[in-house]
Each structure stands twice: as C-alpha cells, then as structure tokens.
Image 1 (tube, rainbow, N blue to C red):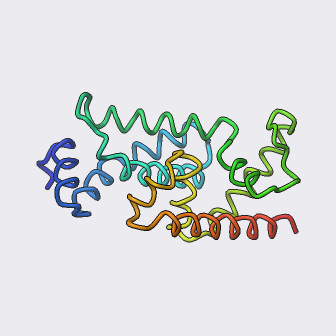
Image 2: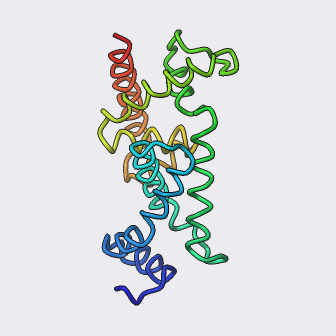
Length: 183
C-alpha cells in the first residue's frame, strides 16, 4: 500500500470504504497536521485535539476532493483554515451554548473580555471531551461545518428526526458537563 499515491488512496477509499486506505493517509500526514496545529496554538494536547478534528472533517470531505490540486495541498488548506478558525473566537461553540439560552455567555462575543472568552472556551472544551465521539461529531457537523440536518441524516444513515433528537441530547449533555465545570 506504500506505493499508492495520495490521490489513489483517496479514490480507493471512496470506492471501497476500506479503513486501511484512510489509515495510510493518516499515517502519512498526521504528524504534519499535528505540527501545523501546534504552530497555531502552542498547546500539545490542544494540537492533538485539533488534529483529530481535522481528520474527522477530512473523512467527511473526501468525496469533495476533485484532484485539481495535490492531496497534500488540499489537506494543508483544510488544516490551515481549521486552525485559523479555531484561533478566532470559536463562534460555533457559543452558538451551541446560546441556542440553549445559557445566560452567562454574552450573545455578542465582543462584550466578553479575552480572559473570560479563554476561560469559557477551556470549559467548553473540557465539556466536549466528555461527550462520546459520535456526539462530538454531530455537534461539529451541525455547528462548525454548518451542515444541514438533512445532510447529516443522509451522511449518518439516520432520519432527520433522529438527528434532531441526538443533537438535542448532545447539547443537553454538553450543557450539563459545562455547568459541572462551573462548580
């Protein structure tokens, strides 16, 4: 499998859905992605989390790879954009929280001090880590990737109502875990 190009591995993965092809891409690029994440946030554990998030995002976006550029260039773009988004105020996290009416966060992130935002972001991250991977994935798809309920249902082979219910449960758990960090 080492002799396959990146583009061939992508095609083979999309055709067969065999994890071995994606794992090979992961082996080739996880360290590079991790180092790029680390250069953005200077936190080894956070960089590992970002790397994991990027590869989750990648597996969902592989079908959109059109081979107009090299795979490594495409992955670098995804990595860079994800890290840049992460460094900016993590609006999607606040969107999840504000959807549920959490009063202690301002709906205008500019009203919060940098220290408050950093503390809240860390608390949200701690709460997110406690969620099951499938719950994290649903929240990321909906609030970070901005994918519609219908598309999520299709990708996850679920009904739209099942996706809505799972999102609600995931948000409720996230709120519960977040509230526990406040104690």
